[in-house]
Image 1: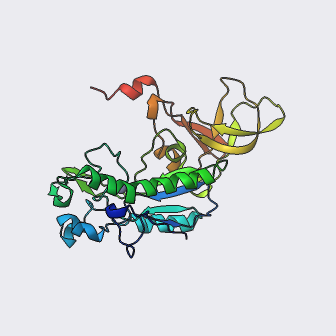
Image 2 (image 1 turned 60 degrees about the horizontal axis):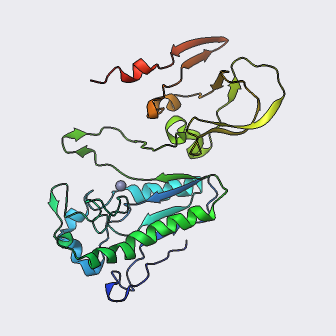
Image 3 (image 1 turned 135 degrees about the vertical axis):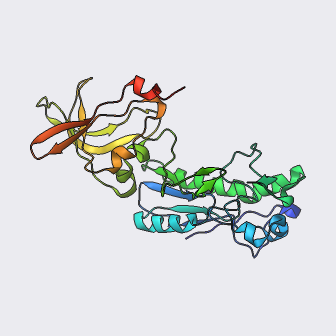
Length: 289
Ligand SMILES: [Zn+2]
């Protein structure tokens, strides 16, 4: 563990010498093909900011942090041997997960709760929070990813969600939100704990096998379905079967970027049965109004 603190900024120094650093790094040399980050791990407020005018009860609520997320992130980091970077201070001081130009970066209210300590801030005060907390945290993530250049790395951010937001109930125990990288959405288990999904040509051509990576259609990211497999080289239009062997893979798949999801077949003894046909474009737009 190598915690590093924010650099003092003369009179602008937000953190006293005896306060915890802007972030914490756990298991920096972890061997997993993943880096975990936890932006909203802490509800701590720098002493100088006098709790931002909030009560201890308010600081325990989701407006100040993601309750439980740090503990989940630490356990996951240990379980898969991944490096983990945790933010050291409350999202109300400056939100590590929002662009600096966002009104939610240093919110004057959150979920209807006024945050008096964030009202009428001078540009210097805002800059002080960026320099003390936001910049070091993101620099630490960049440095860690830089050190791992050449090693496949899935960046996973751990959050927790309030079970009710406004009028909306959120009954799900787990959610996976993602950008362009489908590994977590289509095949969660290989990414998280190295589950192995067999990949085979549907109609083998009898060619010699080559060592290949099987990738998805999002060419600008590391969209991998399988790495270093012995597989004969397919022709354009050939079908590959990805054996999922379980309920999770399809249940978590996505049609992000208007890509129809794959068909699903059930193999039972010696019989194969189509149990879900491939999605069409019409399927994707059917519920649009
Ligand atoms: Zn969060």
